[in-house]
Structures are given as structure tokens and as C-alpha cells.
Image (cartoon, rainbow, N blue to C red; front, side):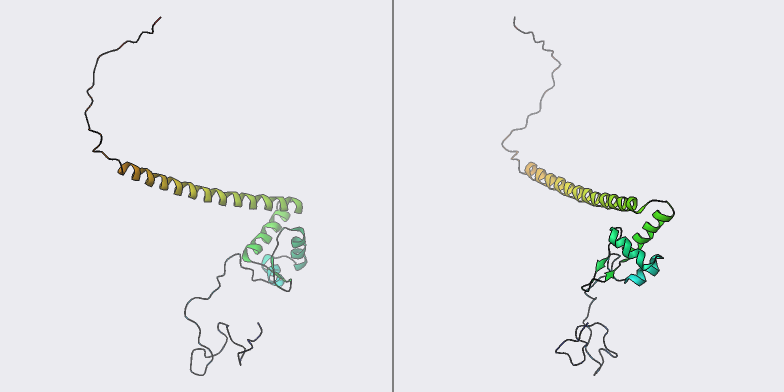
Length: 173
């Protein structure tokens, strides 16, 4: 990060950028509250050398997997690869399928595509189920509102008497 042009120390906007922060004469005070970023398993943080070490593969293997589309890490502005924790796990899975199961890289790519498709479809089904439940709840509320709006004073209530008479119908000829 380059220093901010208005900052004499180049620490403008950085968290944890000065020793003695918050103390008199110790630099800027840190804003209260959590940081504005959240690290998830999809956050690209590992450079290729670290990703290779974590996955147990050679960096050239990672580059080859990227070219083949097996594991596609995010890129920095300078086109450097940045791997996430999910990418590292996927690298391990590709290696396991290749070495232990004997599946070729084209087969592994198809497996990954199908797994991604299944995950997308499961997500869509979940969304549709939620939408359906919401629509059903809205329908029940509307139905209850309609029933509550009935004017019962317009229709006199009379108890129907049960009859045991039998009526036989005969068509005219």
C-alpha cells in the first residue's frame, strides 16, 4: 500500500499501522468497531508458493491445474494468483482423485463441474422452497383475512334437520 499523499507517516487508513496507537503522540487512533473485511474460506489470501506447500503439490502443478481449469484461483491486479482455503482443499481433492482413485485430469474436471452444478441446483431448490413457504404463509394470511371479513349478520343461521326419508329418482321415458 502506498502512503496517502496527505499523511506525513504513510499510515493513513491502515489498521494497526503504528506502535503506540491511541496513545498521546502515538499515531492515529483506531476506529471503534470490527474491521471492514471478513475472512471466509473463499477469501483469496495465499500466494502460489504457500498454496503449494499447504496442498503438498509443486507450484508448477498448481499452474497446470489453473491452465486446465481444475482449480482457478483469484488474481491480483498484477495477475498474481491468490488461493483461498477452499482452493487449497480443492487442490487436495484433485490430487487424491488423481493419485488414489486413478482418475485422469479430464475426468476430474468433469467431476468438479458436476459437483458445482449439483451445489448450484441444491441452492436453487432451497431458494424455491423458501419462496414457496413464504407464498403459502401469505396465502394463509390472506385467506384468514377474507374469512374474518365475512358479515355473518346477513345470513341467518338455521340448523338443518336430518331426514331419514329416501327419495328415488326415475328418469322420464
